[in-house]
Length: 188
Image (tube, rainbow, N blue to C red; front, side):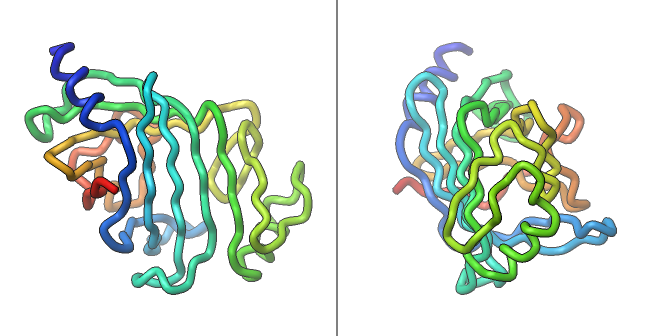
């Protein structure tokens, strides 16, 4: 089993990116569902380190980018996942960096209302670290590292993670770990 994980890690090394804009279910403050459009760029590095850049857009074609999110941390491999032969349970832990860059004034205005405590005033194209801080829009709490209970399935030059729960629940507990595959990333 260890050999299989070692082979998966070796094959995973490098850069991966979204094929096209992806849609994920997310929740409005009132609990109703809304679409979340994004493109991902992922880099898997030695020593189980990763870098993830996400560009969130207002539209399904990615023509109106709203924000860029950068997450840097470690992956913790937790054993086989039953979704497919070779799939692995993996926890993504943002224990090095977590930054947000608003790309439009409308998102800046929202952040200056809901995420001003402990931050400089938000401005377009100016990145701020939310690492280890309270950040209400993402449900982050002071002094804790963001972590997701996810999965990794590698098939050739396609990298699959878990598909979001259709009810908008995050991957915040083992019970919420995904049970389906997301649209894959392709090797860059």
